[in-house]
Image (tube, rainbow, N blue to C red):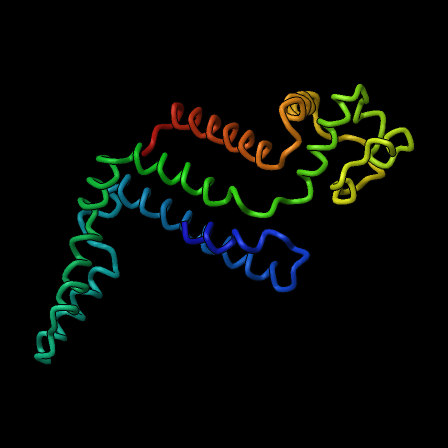
Length: 214
């Protein structure tokens, strides 16, 4: 979630400094994926781990003992370091994972996509809109590239944002049908975004049916 929040303001790569900040957010998202997969393996194969705590838990115990020995224990230290061994135990993660696995999965899946909804789109979206738009006018995006002379009278205010205007459509027919249907509803970026989110959620649902939430 933090990674999504970090990249939302930096989707327009034309802005100075946007790319490094964007990749910072991507790095945070990647770290979250690695941690989630690591915890999944940790809780799935207890025979390999035994009933031992994570290394950080053992370190927390040592730090807590050192604090006790030095007579400088405070409520803060007690709450932080004594909480680690319990919260990082294999039983805790397994219980947390099995109790709310479906809720955790779908809340993260949906909320992360909603957070990214206002992000500035990549330049591919303008081609999606254009190819859907000219289909509603009776033209084939496979036959005419965006800069074709026949299409000049139909240029939109965002036409200049289309990437590779000298190249005709490369997306498959099913995608073109989707572009056309969306263009018949409205030529709005947010509409295409929502359609892609719904398609993405459908794929997530199919995968969850096949593999579950564990």
